[in-house]
Amino acid sequence: MTLRVLGVDPGLTRCGFGVVDVEPNRRATLVAVGVAGTEPAERLDLRLLAIARAADEWLDTHKPQIVAVERVFSQLNVSTVMGTAQASGVVIAAAARRGIPVALHTPTEVKAAVTGHGSADKASVTKMVTKILRLSDPPKPADAADALALAITHAWRSGPNAAGPEQGASMTAAQKAWADAESKAKSGTGRGR
Image (cartoon, rainbow, N blue to C red):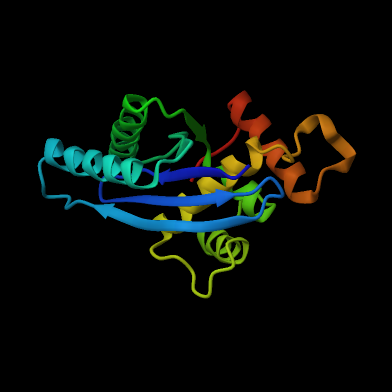
């Protein structure tokens, strides 16, 4: 059975949304991708309202079975962390109102899942998302590619053929890197972007 996932790369200035359908054999297909944006000069309440309306539209239009949101993990800029957390909360609440479960993934987990390396840069993530989804052009801006990467990561992790750490030696290099990133995130030693 195909799993439809909405990935969200939260932010106030640019909030990336990406929907993918993933088959049990892990073949992922793009459904939709885009970015909702707000101006930094706008009042915070209006910025959050714009993100909430965008989330409502994506959820109602694409009807995902689950929403995957980037976990606010570790960043040096406190104002960026706050804005990201606020945007995340708005999206999570929108999903909860519809009874749609939400999963959180750290940037390190996502990078490891799609590239095989938890320290991959944005360009590498975008390149692999383009390849995985068989796209002729990379999704732009980077927030859109990151949203798709989140959706792919969650589907691969939760799908019937997703490899977990218990499979040890049969894991691919990417799956081993992913399991390592997850372990570090859970222990608090992983780093965000």
